Image (cartoon, rainbow, N blue to C red; front, side, top):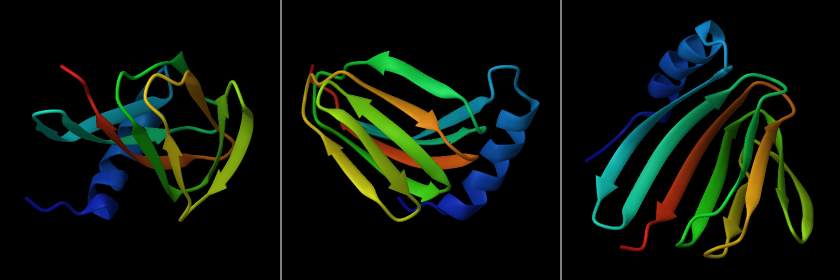
Length: 108
């Protein structure tokens, strides 16, 4: 499998712009415990606090965001990669229009 995140980002940005929620996402890989999802968020939109049973990585493809966990807030910009341990509650807020690539290992 191969993907072109830039091409997918353009589609997702258009969907997010048209969405009342200001966000759009597409699961690129769903194979066993592996999930890779590309997400577009409009400025000011927050992915509310949630937990994932397995570890998660959040890669910022475009824009700036704030990732919040119980340990505090991490400011991230395009090119940054954040690793979150299994079961850690986290939220993501788009400081600017934002494109993310989220990888998760989902426990069965």
